[in-house]
Image (cartoon, rainbow, N blue to C red; front, side, top):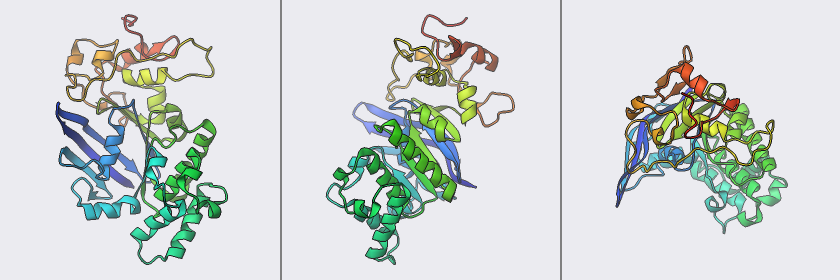
Length: 346
């Protein structure tokens, strides 16, 4: 069952320097029990995309176009009263920084209980607090009953993130948005957070949108991947399609920059040359063109996001190169990567 359908989403902010197009024509869908990862470097539009779904980017200087339908209900034109019901009750949100997302002067358990009662007035304070303890136990917070009376500063970073997940799950939402849920966590705690997300999907068929720049996390938990660059999706497909048969040079660069344990230690990790373009004045044609060592004349035209790989109709990309040529050019030093400027395979 399809939970969410996003079609041609565009988000722009009016600034003193002009119109900044933070999201430009993004489309994707999310099914029940599916984990969709949205990846890309900072500033690519990932967080703006998901925050717009819940009306968190609205303002007098914001222009939003397109469609985002949650189980048939349009979110982009929904009123504030309707969105207040959607937030928490139907869509849970795990924000990037749990310390700034939790009230520092309110006990953690009370904050979780407050959300439960906000969406169900029939629940008493005692029942909501008991439910908060149960949720904290579910996300593996030790000594949950005692911890429910603690304040956010008494929690470690990993425990605060788990408390945020517990709060997001407090009303049994159909969809969960996790914005960089493992940022700044050590690998052990990161593994625990990912394990909790897996259990959520297995237990309740909740659909998850995972926003991250960590491809290791994506490989571990996601079913499908959408790669964003300069406000656009430049490639999307299943995890296997994107990781083992990537079709866009930007994706090659991301995959090539991952440190590998099966390779000899390099002096420096491979990088993508140049810098992302300004979204105030995006380049014409392929937006990755100015940084791409494989660019050619046709890249001056914007390639559509479409299926180009045989029968893989769900594997989409924005690159004019022929599939066979892509598969030849993406191999750098025996593995997938982006050739350095000046070392392009002719």
